[in-house]
Length: 506
Picture 1 (cartoon, rainbow, N blue to C red):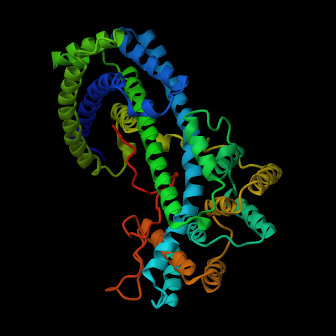
Picture 2: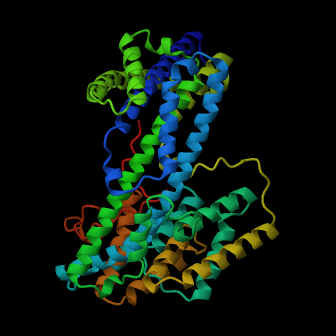
């Protein structure tokens, strides 16, 4: 049971947090508008699509009319709906752009493998003793460290991707079909349809609708690299290609940040229109907030007059810092009290509503565009799909992938096929997978190819927080990560990438 005094304390802190984040949203929105008027490095190298520019114009108009909207319930409700519409638009735009990351993953894995193989040859490790029995034990221990069946299958899929693709076409598609059946037992039609579309967009990204619509030079650059065979390149050519791919990744990251900034501004509008604060409420404690709001509106109306832009930007940054510090302080106090609650059903209705608003504000304020594109809002109560529906859906998907794979260059085809099967809960038992890995190492084209399998598996262990052993703790062999120096690129940028890429929360 929650005592009355604790409930009052939590409600007070939560209310204070909500108000603090509303002020923060106002200031961050204004800062975003000012930064929009600065010369953007992205616009120097790419033509920004009108869809994206129109979103920014909508945000600027909403900012200019913010005072009126916050003071009128009907206008505010309409503005909230409009803002949710803007949010859907930027997520759809970024979902399209995200296909480039998928294509980059497929191509870069081939290039990175070749770079790693040549590094190994330079290191001349052929006389290095590798304790394979220990490695195979680590593989089993890693898989069995999973805390659920679904996680175990996910771990197995990740290990499967460490092995060069060598499987008869019919056997491969049979395994994909069995894995689909395993993955979607009891799932709804909506869940299956959405997931299969996601698999298509990840493993056949250039066939997704409107691919190349935004930042088309990126699409062309990736397309040009599809036919390159890294193993046939000289060291200098390979190094140049590897550098180009890293530059392309940095370019994609810049575009990602650009889209995240737009989402942040829209989320700020959503928070302001969702809550019941007027502009006067948000600025009464510091009249400087009101002054800077009106100054930003003047600048947005006359963007060519940019004399005071830098001054206003610096002022906003000064205002924002203590807001963020205060939010962190309030959050610590609130979380400390919430940790003491064991049964949230005991909370009063008023406190539950306050915490629900608090949760919405937090989720919106710290929204991440990479998570947003995979937030499908599926109906958890939808009935399971029929066997007939699943058979038709799976067969159509398999036929689509067969046709797509058949038109790809061999090396890219293998990478794409690995990407697909590795994304599914693979329909293999542990020992069958282990035999598959053993066979790949025993029959590796060269010593270095076998070494690459082991090191990629080691990277998989590390990425998932599994502490594997090596043949000598004092002489660890090829800890394969972003700092290993082998030249292999470890940034597989997808929904499970774990690459540590900064997605710029507010």
